[in-house]
Structures are given as C-alpha cells and as structure tokens.
Image (cartoon, rainbow, N blue to C red; front, side, top):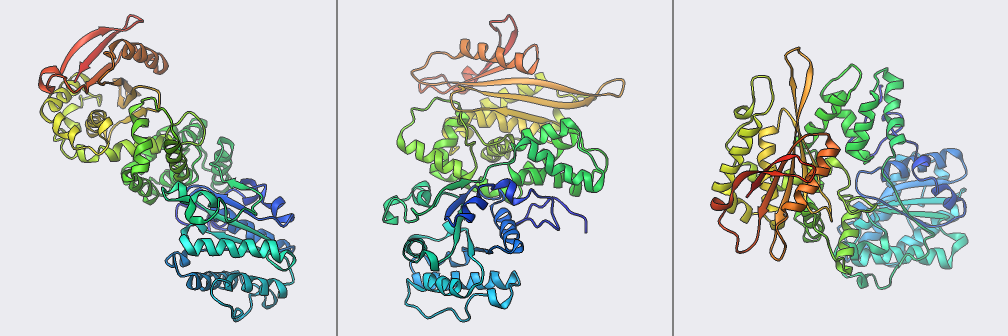
Length: 526
C-alpha cells in the first residue's frame, strides 16, 4: 500500500508519511528512563496522539517497558461521578491493551480489583504493576476532557500512587491534552481554585509543549513522498508551503494531500500548486479549520483577535494575558512575540469567516471586473466599492460582532467576492501595526502567452475619536509596504469612525495624495 499524507486521526508509520515520535518529543525517553511523570500539551491536530501512540509502540517493541497509550474521552461525560469515571478509564485501558495484542502475562487484571469509588483507578493500576513483568508506562491522552471532580480525583489518585507506593505503582506517566493540566481551568475562563490547589499533579517533572514542524521537518516530511513516488516539490513550493502553514502539522499534511489526491497533480509540485491548494482548503473549510472558526464567537477569543486585526496597541493586563494564553493554547496565535495569528492560512480564514455574512450582500460578481486578458479593472473595482459603501456601509458595519474592525471587514469581503476564483489576497495585520496591509495578486496571460501577475496594494487605516487624522502616518506606512512588495503606487483607505463624523454618503470620496517618497497615492476616505 502506498503511503499518503493523513488529515484524519492519528498517523501510523506503515500507512502515512510522518516524523518519528522520538524526533518530536526527544525528552520523553529520558523522563521515562528515570521513572518520571510529565505533561505533553499542544493545540488540536498537531500530532500529540500520533507521537504518543508511536512512542508507546516503540517502547513496548524494544522490550524494556510495557507502554500503553489510551484516550480519556470516553470518561468525559461523568464530570461529577467519580466512580463512573474510574470505570470508564479502566475500561479504556483494557480495550487499549487488547488492541495492542499484549501477551497474557502483560494484560491488566481481569476483572479489575473491587475497590470503593474514588480509589478504584489507583488500586487497579497497582494490581496491574504487581503482576506485570515489565515497568509499566501509561500515556493518558485527552486528559483535559475530564472535568471538575472527575479530573481532580483522577489526578489525586495518580499523585498518591507516585508519592506513597512508588515501587509498586506505574513507572512513568504522561498526561496529554490541549493545555498544561494545572492551567486548564483558568485558561478556559473558569475558576482555577476549583481544582483545590495550584497543581493537583505537582509531581510532574516537566510540561512539554509539542511544537509545530520546523522548515527542515516540513522538507523532510515532503521528501518522504518524493522518495517513494519520485514526485518532487520545487524549492519555491517548499518555501511557500512552510510560509503558509508555519509548520502547523495538520496544515502541512492537508496542503500536500490537496495537491496530490484532490487536484491530482502528477508533475513536479510548484508554487502555483501551493497557492491553488491553499485557496481550495480555505474555501472548503475542512474540519480542522471549522473547529477554529467556531472559537471566534468565544468572548475570550474575540478579546484577543479583534484588537489584533485592528492593529491597535494594547495595555496588557492580567485578564488580557490570560486570554492570550488561552488563544495560544488553541493554536490561533503564535507562541512567539509579537502577538500575531499563528500562520497565513489562519490569518485568511479568520477574516473571511468574519466577513462571510457581508459577502452575501454583495451582488457584483468577478466577471464584471475582468478585462479580456484576465486582469482586474482596478479603477472600476474602487469606484464600485465606494458606491457599495455609500449604500450599505452603515448597515453592514453596524451588524458586525467584531464592531471595532467592521469597516475593514466590509472592504475585505468586497475584495474577496471580486477576486475570489481567479486571484489571491495576501493580508498582513497584527497588534501595534495600526493598519491592515492587503496585496491583491491576479494571474493573467500577456500577449506572448506568458504567465504574468497583476499586483495591487491597499493600506487600511481607521480614524478614531481622540486621535488625529491618520493620513500622514498612513502615507508613510504605505510607502514602506510598497517598498517591500516592490510596487510604484497603491491605495490608502481611511475609515472615519469618529462619533461626530459626517454621514458615509458625504465623506466617501477619492482624491490623490503624495507620499513622503513622492509617490502619487489614491486616497479613499470612507
């Protein structure tokens, strides 16, 4: 069977292209060798389950340990029923042992020992250790799917086994989830004191945060496909794949899968294929992307994402820092400074989803703005947006949940409606930038039949109460952006959001402005 890039569930080395577990969590073996307990956490679909399951298989096959990986999700519905939670966990452990085809002498006790509720997990594991010929290593996956009393009791029993019966209890344990266990309640907006102590699992030696792939790891993964099939990725395609995904494991796999299995490209994979695949993934909004979209209505997420899109500076307070930590745990924003969306694909998905309701109100279609050679009729596009804004701007902007960035979302939705299907929109925004930069890229064919690309640049600014007219700042910022993208001119859009601003119908107008470098800039005040 030919291997493929997996986008659904854990990866298996005989079926899927994947990186070895020991490369992704190299410290785990050292902790296990010393009989230590640790935590592994990362956002969804970053390879936690794949890495732990692969590591468990390797450890057991090597013969020094009996290592077993299992999921706690089946017990997640028993938040306050400690006894039911214990039985569900013990049941999952037995099922995982059966799936692993362990020899009879290594199987858990059958039945598990009788024990009062609240002690059954610890007593059961101790009984298994007593009869098992190898040191026992357990990986509790999805541990943070447990809640309240169920989670607290589970952690306390594991801690009690470690502190009071070290020689007769599980040799090493890893707890795996979206967040560090001690932080899961606070990170989700709840009361951290509900866990009873700062950390009911304070016996852990470390918390490992499973990172995204590096550029070299993306190349190594894609090279596995080349080695097996002979199909190559161009150097520029590899660079672009890493840039768009920033190494997020599901996105890395999904991008390659889209090209190979759905687009059915059989030749060398180029940057054009990467661009098309990225657009198709965003439009299709696969399960992974939809799960992120669902979070945008969460007030904690909005508190971070809205100012990030708006580009305004934030006086961080403890509550905002907690919100940032939560959004980082979800994988929506990068873990390194400055605060920014985790990767360009998420960047695009967020603003498209927030503007999707606006787009439904746009009756103009892409064909109305296409010239015979495939280029955009850019002056007409600008004129049509100004007319659309005069007619609909107040209503559409007023209806947006993300009110602070409503006008920018209206313009981006309009551009997406026109450009979608034939071109691309690259967006740059982030806390402290004070603007949104947009680059429209429209492929077309010149008179000699050669592929060319039309590029048009926008900068979006907002004039708010108690702030001066951002024209001067915007022109200087646009100068810098045009230098970066190597364009001679661009469009500066200033949305007037002051309470006493004139009505949209009166203030929406075009004019020319001169940038500090001497460029003639098209200025739209809206």
